[in-house]
Picture 1 (cartoon, protein in one colour):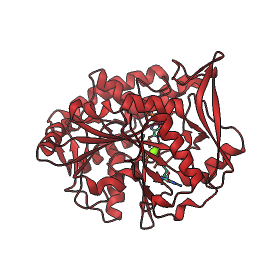
Picture 2 (spheres, rainbow, N blue to C red):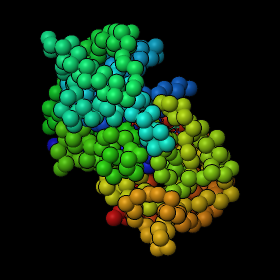
Picture 3 (cartoon, protein in one colour):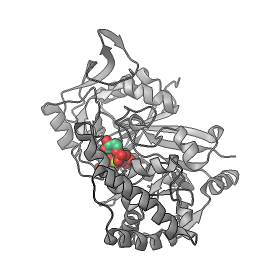
Picture 4 (cartoon, protein in one colour):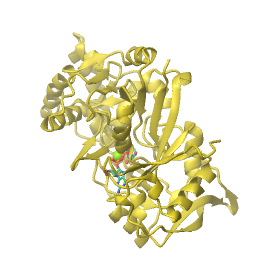
Length: 429
Ligand code: GDP
Ligand code: IMO
Ligand code: MG
């Protein structure tokens, strides 16, 4: 029986997961998203086309691949419809290749309103949510109130919707926020027709059947490990398990069926929204990373905070996920840098540590090593053998510190700007 490879972000999201899923899809029969919802924005670039996906897995542009939205995902039918419309514009017919779990939960218009009301009530302590209704929808899921995709086929769906809406309206009243409008509801109900056009499946059964038939599956994560509900910088996190274990619960895959775990990280670090970020740069170097890296959110357009690579945080994410290979993204963004810093330890209350403290607060001071920049235009390279020696040193340093090989060095947003590394020489721990 085949195993499921898992691809996930090791930082605070936006590491470049969409690009790599698209690059790797030809190796797999099925691509399956396992958690999150339209808070995600996964960008793909090829043949001069740039496309951002929110709910739909990033294998959708490759012919023949089946794309599954798993039970762990939360779906806003309105956003889903917009995504399908965009694919239609590009003549991508997903009707037979996209399947949706009946157990995925639905984001209602009132979930979005509750997200906004909750954030507004937090004032300075706000999470910086994408306001897509993610938190309230997962709250209803764990609170056992939620509506699932499979429910839209039932006769009493409208009644159950009305019951949940009523509950939400009361909560909105408590916040002093406005309720849902008739237009919002109309648009939501109309967009359910788009969902119904696709095969709604028992995805856990479907995926395990594929494994038994010897088919290969790639599980696509959203967000990043440092936004995980359990292991992220709580409470400044998202509301799902973004780590590898989330692929088991979000797809119905047994832990012993997990194969390779591909951990995606940027050669530096970014974060969008509130919350601690030890290596954040507030100077012109941070501005340079932001401008060259076009660090503006794919979903919200917000400016991403930028900083140096944080190895204690990366090692922590590697540990929690059981990462077997690393992919280093956006390496080209630092092509012009004379020197590059990497945080190797934290100083907490005067003591040095390379472990994640309970709280990543202002007491956590990063300790850096400085390395020489490679000062080479990487974007034109076509082969991993062509890497400049200063970049090889940077790669080797990260591999030695983490004990995990870097199998891909990404040097631009396009599919083609992907350099594969021979990882057999690196000893994995
Ligand atoms: P995701 O959420 O992890 O899929 O990442 P996003 O799509 O939100 O953000 C990554 C951004 O970086 C996108 O705009 C990509 O097109 C872009 N990108 C991905 N890899 C590279 C790379 O190696 N170099 C550069 N310059 N941009 C990249
Ligand atoms: P992808 O999949 C980056 C952040 C938000 C906020 C926090 C909680 O594209 O990497 P939420 O809307 O989930 O309640 O927001 O998490 N966040 C992301 N940051 N990339 C993402 O997804 C994110 N999804 C959520 O900015 O700080
Ligand atoms: Mg993104």
